[in-house]
Image (cartoon, rainbow over all chains, first blue to last red; front, side, top):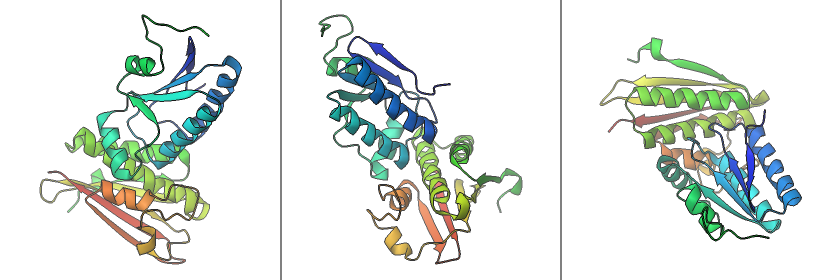
Length: 124
Length: 137
C-alpha cells in the first residue's frame, strides 16, 4: 500500500506525508512525485506535513533532495502544515530547510503556488 | 533509583526499529508530562541515535534503553548502544559538519542541542554508548 498518497488538483500535485514515514516510503515518494510530475506536467507540488510528528535529519535531507529534483523538473514545491514543535526541533537540529518554500496550511500553500482554491484558477 | 519495571529495552536492527524506538520514547515522554516540544526533541534525538546504529554499527544492530529518571522534577534517559567499530575521535564527531557516511553531518551535534545532557563512551573497536537525558522544568 502506498504510504504517500499523491492526488492531482489542477496543475498541482498534493502529497500527504504520513506520520512516521519509513525510509523506503520516503524514497518511494520521491520517485512517485518526480514520475507524476513528468507525466502530468504539473507545475506545483504541495507537500502536506500536518500529521508528521518527527522529522529527523534523514527525512530532512530527503525533503531537500525531493525539492531540488522537483525544481529541476521546472516545478515549485511548497511544504505546508509543519507542526510548531517540529519547526523548533528542526532549527535546533540544524536543519533549517533553507530555500524550501513553506506555508502555514494547504490553502495558503495553494495561493503561493498561484492557485487560489475558489478564484483565479489558472489553466495551462 | 529508576524503577526497572518502567525500563524499555528496544533492539535496534533496522528501519522499523528506528520508528519503534522513537515512538516508545515519545510515549514515555508524554506519560512523564513532557510538553509537545520536548516530546518532539526527544523523539528526534532517539531517531538520530538509532539511525546511527543502523547505519554504522556492525550488522546495523544495537539496543535502545529508555527509562524515566526520578531525580528533581523527573526526566527521561535513553541509552543507545552498539558493538560496532566505535568512534575514533568523539570531539571531532561532535563538531558540526562532521560525517563519516552519507548524511548532513548533524547527527551527534544536532542531537546534543535537542537534549539537556549527552555523554558518549566510545573508542576504536569497542562500540559506542550514547546516553542522552532531558529534564522536566
